[in-house]
Amino acid sequence: MDRMHQLAACPSCEEPLESADLFCGACGYDLSAVPEPPQDRPTVAVGRPVEWPEADEADSSGTPAPVQQPGELPGTDSGGRPLPGTPVRFDGPDAAAPAPAASAAPAANTVHASGDFELAAPDPRAAAASPSPHGAVPPAGDAKLCVACRAGHVDTDGYCENCGHAQPRERDHMEQELGAVAAVSDRGLRHHRNEDSFAVSSTALPDGSPAVIAIVCDGVSSATRPDEASAAAAGAASESLLESLPRGTHPQQAMHEAIVAAAEAVNSLAAEPAGAMEHDPHRHQNAPACTLVGAIAAAGLLVVGWVGDSRAYWVPDDRSGPPARLTEDDSWAAQMVSSGLMNEAEAYADERAHAITGWLGADAYELEPHTAAFKPDRPGVVLVCTDGLWNYAEAAEEMAQVLPQEAAGRPLDAARVLVGHALDGGGHDNVTVAVLPFAVPQQGAGSA
Picture 1 (cartoon, rainbow, N blue to C red):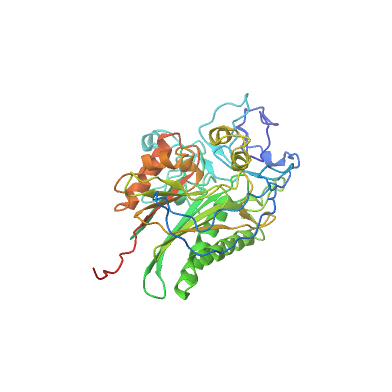
Picture 2: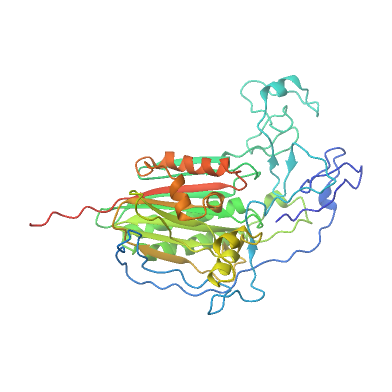
């Protein structure tokens, strides 16, 4: 949800504008001097506390049996119906990037509210043939060329010394493989930056058996500094799990504590000044926010935890067994489905589907971590992902069709295939997925 002005033309020279421009491209007029209308600050409905039952066995169908079913969604009554006036946040592929005004001329380079520059990939041939519009001398040697003006030198902070524009970030595409888990994150084809983040790690339980961890976070696009929120949450959750699991904390309790730690890390960002926005006193700011989903595979137990609409899926290695979605969204669409007012296809096709009712952030009225534990009776793969992926594979059966058969043995390749599927589908949002293979512990040989 963009908070920029909606001017169609520059007040100074009448040059057509994009809806998120900070300065006029023709005369340099500072558009931040144009006041904005006041904006409301959303919050989240009160939820129900989490309970901690013991783990149970898988059912005969092969789908992991839940130890704890997700609780009632926040903002609903006892019958699951949405309460009037339930506040939500809006997140999704177009939340921070509305279409330009009808009279605005298309522009190849657009400055967004974050100060980042949306750019096509630079063409070295065009850079060599075209003189700098600012009269700067192209940098020599190994100096990095600005992808905006094609001539300025990029400083150590990632900004052009000639035109001042931010350069594409290293976070635009990230990959990591760590033994039995891998993750890939990509900016997508429409967003100006990657606001997702992830953390994959492993540790050992007190008995020496391994515990593998995957955390995926999606920055809420309508919030201030969503990229910082997702990075802070993923890092804090991973650190919490790496500290608590070796001490013998039950994985489900450890996941609950990790989500709380992630929320505290995101909350702390609200007290920090937003340096990139200090130049614009009129820009509306709100608390950084993100969603979170995580999974732990340890001692034959699969634990998932989440807040928001990022998801976890289970796909058995034997594809004759049914896949399953292991999480329930904190969202308007989920409320419609649970209340029986819409079916899933209708709800997620609605423009309000990405209105989330739970998130991590200082303006979340009450934190309600969801956790569930499963004990699969067969090997499979756990996928934890942002909506940038599941928008293109909504149902568990669709996700299983996209996931390569050899995913358990090649998790990084599988994650790349899943991200590629989202990009091929349009890549309207940031895309992040972690692939965590789950192996059933070998039972000791008994007497005949």
